[in-house]
Length: 480
Ligand code: NAP
Image 1 (cartoon, rainbow, N blue to C red):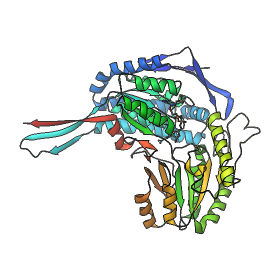
Image 2 (image 1 turned 30 degrees about the horizontal axis):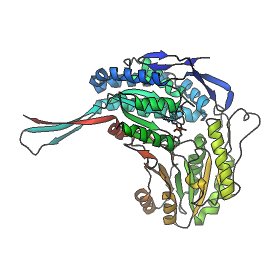
Image 3 (image 1 turned 180 degrees about the vertical axis):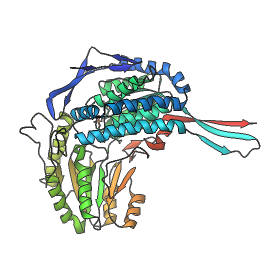
Image 4 (image 1 turned 90 degrees about the vertical axis):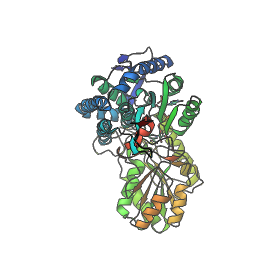
C-alpha cells in the first residue's frame, strides 16, 4: 500500500506519522497512507515558497502558464484513474467524479490561458505628455486550505490563479480526501514546476492551519470550508493583517412558483438537494414552494426522491453515494432527529441504510421534511447532507422573505416562467450565486464564484474575479 508524501521544496517528503484514507462506501478498502505533517513542515514549506518567489514572480506570465498547460495534459492522461480515486476517497459517483476531474483540467487550462491576458489598466491622463497605467503584481507566499467535497476542483481553482499571477504557494488539503489534490501536485511536479513554487502539506487542520497563518513569509490566505473554521481563520489572520479570502457554508433555497415548468422544477430540486449526497456548498437545503402547487409539488418530489438509488458510486446506475465519513454521517443523522422533533416524521427517507452493500459504508436515505417553518433549526442551520426542508409560501413576496431569512447567502434558485419574477428574484435575492430554472448547484469556472452574508468574506474566486485576490496593482505615472 502506497504512502503519499508531502511536497516541500520540490521533494516528496515522508513523515514519521501517517494517517489512513479509507473508502466511505466500504471502509474495508484502504486507499493509502498519507503523510501527517507538523508545524515544522509548514514552516519549511513557507520558507521554500519565500525563496522561490522572486524568480517565479519575474518569469513572464505566459511562461508560467506553460507549467499549468503541461500539468493539465498530464492529469488528462490519467483521467479515468484520478476520477476513480476520487469516487473511492470522497464517495461521489463515478460520473460526478469524472465531471469534476474534467473541470479541474479545464480550470488549469483556463487560468493558463489567462497568463497571456494578465492585463492592468491603461487610461488617458489629464496632464500633457503623462502616460499612466497600472500593472498587476503578485502578492508573495499564499496559503491555501481546501475542503473534501470538491477535492480536486477547489484546490485547482485556488492554485491555478495563484500561480499564474506569480505567487508561490503552500497548500493544505482536507484530511478526508487528500489524494485528488495530491494528483494535481504530482502533475505540476512532473510538468517541471520550479522547486519551492508549489508546496503541499497534509495533516491535521488545526495544527497546520495555525502554523500556516503564523508562518512569517505568508502574505495571504484563501480558505474554503465550514463557517466556524473560516471565522477562526479570519480572527487569526487579521492579527497579522494577511489578505483573507473565505468561502464557507450555505443554507441555499430554491423557490418554486406556481407557474414553473413543473417536471423540470421537481428534477432540479431533487438534483440540487440530493446529488453528491447533498454535500455541495451550493446544494439546495430549503425548497420554498408557493401555496397553490405545494401539495402537488411535494407529492411529485417525494415520488422522485424514492426512486433515487443510493450505493457505492463506482457501480453503474447509482445516483447518490455515501456521506464522506463517520462524523458527517452522524451530523446528518443528528439533524434528521432534530427534524423529527421539529417537523414530525419525514415524508421521504430518514434512515441510515444497512444491509449488504451498506454496512461498511456511511449511507443515508435522501430525506425530506415537509411543513417546515422558518424558526426551525432544520430551516436555518447547514446540515451538509441529503436532507431537504420544504417550506410553504403564501406568495412570491413571502417566498422571497423566507428565502432571505438566513445568515447565509451562497446560492439560490427560482423555478418560474414569469420573467418579471425572475428579475425580482435576481435583484432581491441576497446570495452570491443565482440560478433560474436550473439546480442551485452546478457552477462553471469562467465567472466569479462566491457568496454573501456569512457564506463568504473577501474577493470572489474563479473567472476574472480570481485576480482581485491573487494580485495587487502597481500604478505608474510617467512624464515623457
Ligand atoms: P472544515 O472542517 O472547515 O475543513 C476545511 C479545511 O480546513 C480542511 O482542510 C481542514 O483540515 C481545515 N481546517 C480544519 N480546522 C482548521 C483550523 N483550525 N485552521 C485551519 N484549517 C483548518 O470544512 P469541511 O467539513 O472540510 O467542508 C465542508 C464545509 O465547506 C461546508 O460548510 C461547506 O458549505 C463548505 N464549503 C464551502 C464552499 C464555498 O465555496 N463556499 C465550497 C465547498 C465547501 P482537516 O480536513 O484536516 O480537518
